[in-house]
Image (cartoon, rainbow, N blue to C red; front, top):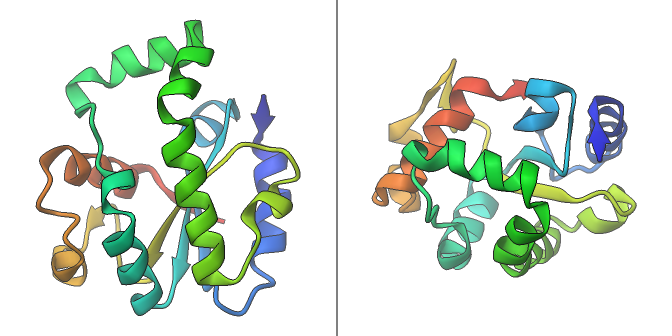
Length: 160
């Protein structure tokens, strides 16, 4: 299990890197103060974010829509091994590629903590709404479940 203090420690390390302009927390650690992983939106240069979304598209598509989120939360709570098996490879691939693009070893910074990173440009949202104009050429808004997931993140993410 991870907690808010773990997230804050990792954020301090991430903020030291010149290609990272900000970090936002979302997910269970934000909502409950603890969780199985720490979910971050890492703010980077527009071109880095576009490259990541372009190349990682297959690993980023949200397969379970928001109507099934209670089921996913149940699975994560009661059967965490099942959830981990279903997403482990996609998550590891995303993290490794984000590390390569940004020039930061996210796994080393996390020191064994399970991180989930989403690279976004600084203007990815306006307040608590997706900035559709800023993301229109990323191809992320064309997939219904992915768009709904990003809208949910935009509503809850908090800058650290």
